[in-house]
Image (cartoon, rainbow over all chains, first blue to last red; front, side, top):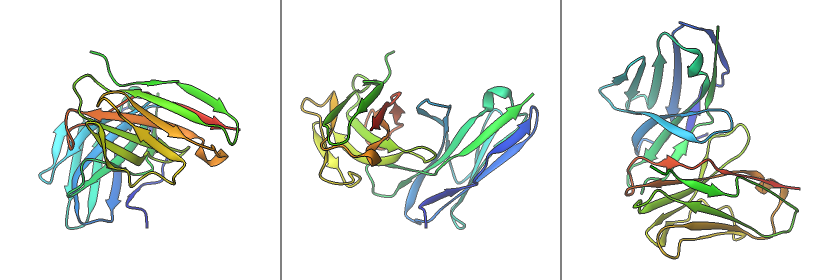
Length: 111
Length: 113
């Protein structure tokens, strides 16, 4: 079983749609959680950290459920510029920061 | 300010050759990470430096892979006797300290023919 598993995608949605990505992680010792965004042939960039209380950044909302070992990302009112691959990322408790990435879910927002 | 830079941006080599990939971290960042990303996959951790020392090299796939950071800044990832399966994008990231936000470089695309 992969340490971090994500929806296979791709997700093809019209502009203005709401889209949700799900992710599960296998190691209960995971301590930190993130969503990264990766544009085609570019490097990953941190989109947002994910906290147990849930957090929101504009049109983006991230949720963490430690009991279910489940992470989600919700994008409201999607824009063409949101088209990218979204990577679910965890960091193990006690590790020195090496990140464990999911395979990513590709999002295509169409006009 | 300047981000993480990596050279070369692309490298084509033949099976069995030796390659070196270079990473210049953000100035002042003490932590440096190497990851490898194959097509359709997320990045996979290779090695982590804190200062000059390799604090965790558990991700290196075998002894053909080696990395150094002699002065605690620039790092070089070295691959001996390259194989076709080594073809991937090699990403470098740096952070102010371990467990802080990692900033990735643009990567080196390695193709082994």
